[in-house]
Length: 152
Picture 1: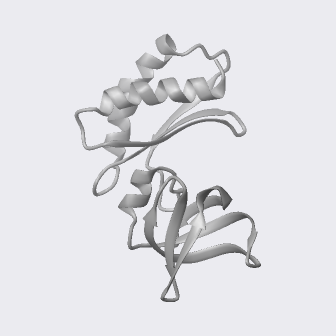
Picture 2: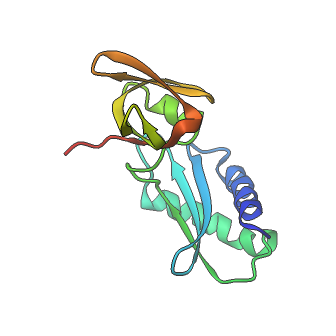
C-alpha cells in the first residue's frame, strides 16, 4: 500500500473507533523519520489525555495488521497534535476564529514571507486576518502553513 492509501484507511478505522466519543480525528500521517511512524492525532474539548490516547491505541492496534498491507516495521503513535500544529481543516480554522495565527507563504507577498494576525474567517479559497486593525484577505493556495501564534 502507498502512504496515502495507508493514511486514508487508518483514518476510516479511527473514525469508526471514536464515532460515539467527544474525540475528533485531526490527522493521520505515515512518515519516515529515522524509522517509520504511523501517527494518529486526536483532539477533544479540553484537550487529549494520556488515557484517551491509550484507549484509541488499544482499539486501533489489533485492527491494523488485518486492515493494512505494510511490509516494513512501523511504530504506532496516538497523541494530541500539540499547540504548534498546523491548521489544516475548515474545522481547525473555525475552532480558532478570534485567535492570533501565523501564516507562512510559499513565496513572499509584498516582501513578506510570514504574516501574523487575528483569524477572522476561512474558506477553501482564502483566509481573512485582522492585522493592525486592517482586514487582510490571503488566497489559500499561496499559504504554505497556518499555525497558532504562541507568544511567551
